[in-house]
Amino acid sequence: RDGSTFAVGTQTGDLQIWDTEKGKMTRTLTGHDGRICSVAWTNSFVSTGSRDRNILNRDLRENRDYFAKL
Image (cartoon, rainbow, N blue to C red; front, top):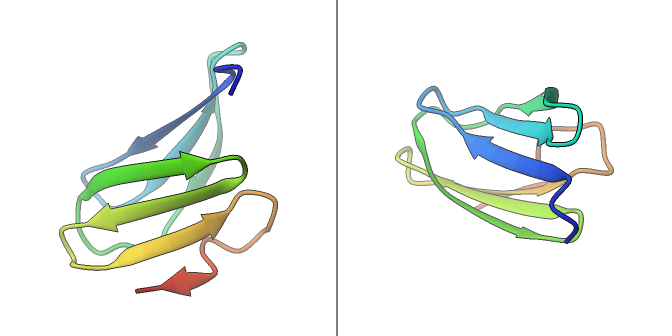
């Protein structure tokens, strides 16, 4: 909400989480086999859609890369 965190979907299927205030990547989440085409974010939850035809639901408070695959 405050713009201090930024998410970037990569061509290799990784999701990068960036701290905009420090200008540093804080985390990389895996799980997709293709380019991430869409990212939806609400509070600590992030959903990503990929060319691999999957949607991954992620909770940034958890250590695992995703908690549900659709």
